[in-house]
Length: 374
Image (tube, rainbow, N blue to C red; front, side, top):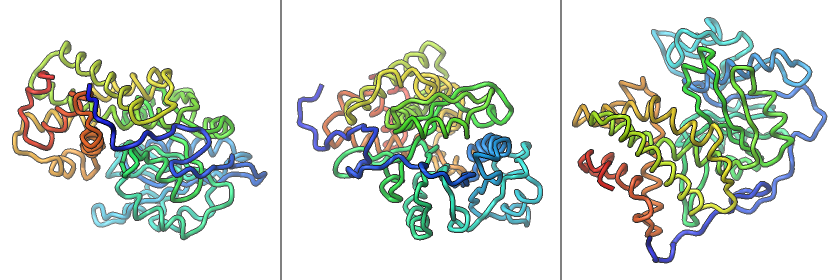
């Protein structure tokens, strides 16, 4: 273990403050009903979530406005605007083909128009987009008791250490932001397969309200008061999934993949405890933790593309995003870069041999077989 003094400080995993120390009151405290919900994002996972929450909203008109507004990044598909296809055909034919969206989902390509008057903002876009989107949302203006929910799996960093996506949203908009993460392969959820997810909240009152929005008998949502732990698990497991994909590309068997998963879980926990105070041990045994790690290492886009990266020498991550993922983004590659930067800057590389090996294979041309030479 390195004895060098860390250059970055720990973040506080507090249930009452944001990363910049701003105290946030419990919101959604007004009696204004029904509550308006806006889903910011309309990709594969965004449309799956839209199917769930739109049905819940329609069945609880006393609690929720029945119309789910969904911001759509406008694209042209077969000569038609994607937003028009969604609103007329009730299907996202590009990112979730074959599954109908409820008729109370309304696609809106203008971001300010979509978020106007929303009591709940659900974010489901690549975290790289937030830098341009959040100022527009702030400029639009938010209702006094608005809250956010992040479904985005990724992390960033600054001079003080790790920065979570929920903290970026919370600081930019001055709202409380919960997180939803879990072992949720999008197409399996869309097909109605039973699964669980973890809702990390700062306040149980928010948790109870948001559970009503997301929970169904096929999509079981458990509430925990550890949003930072939930979010870190959701981001870091994608890095481990790259390692699992490298193993698959090399033709290694189940024993090797199981070892990579175990070592990955250890490094996930170590990273959380190393850079955040207050992370709860039980969170790693929720759906967002070990369950999501296992699912992602056996399925999902990060594992799949990592396998192809080894088999198809010379293919780039960007090429796979454009072709294999039909334009969608990988989360694991970006997170692997951020994680490596943080552990390198804090002289912590000896503590994270798996994370370091995954980064070097993905971006420095290291031999993929080094995944088992830790």
